[in-house]
Length: 260
Image 1 (tube, rainbow, N blue to C red):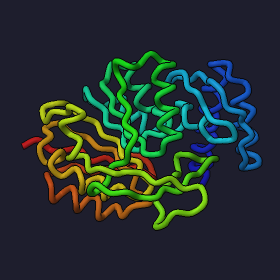
Image 2: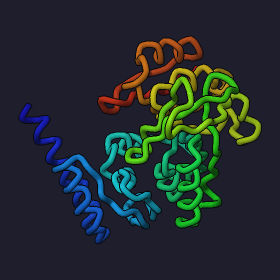
Image 3: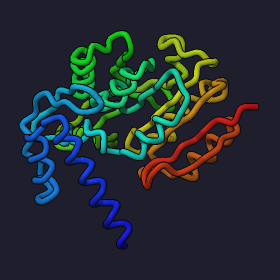
């Protein structure tokens, strides 16, 4: 319990330092208020962080997503990997793709929700990343289909699929990744890192990427498993190829393809 408390304090200090070092005083104020009240009154606007320059939405948690300390264990894991191409499935603001594009990685960002996709497009331009980041406004799943997604204006990273249209939903077209391989130009010999964060649809994305996963020679995946069945994810991947699995944090695992 003491160690957990110490880790939380350390992480919060890293959050605050990230805002301070870039003179983002309003973001620091909003972060403190969010911690104390659970509410965000961030007005939105352009914010600078170690990941880049980002346009953010009002009264949302966008200002938190673009902080380097957010999901810091994932970022530290990524920094240790050897890859040339990044597939960002469930890209939100495009923060990971822009961050890695600045490091010379070719990035493909998939974001189904139109409002978030528009933010990615603006953030690509803000960072002059057109050469390095390509954004796609559709979702990925098991097969081509139309699905309804519930929009979360405060926490856009939590937009998720629902069974029927209701208030504040958007109808979105899904494709399988295998359908899109020729369009996006990803070749099996590339060194690829793929991050999947799709609010419980992770297994379906993997099922729609069977050919890609089977044929890729150098593949590392980061997969959020908290809303999916982690055992099913491991089983499905093991049916496609040999993988080494491990935990990154309490929400995410990695799967590294073992070369034959």
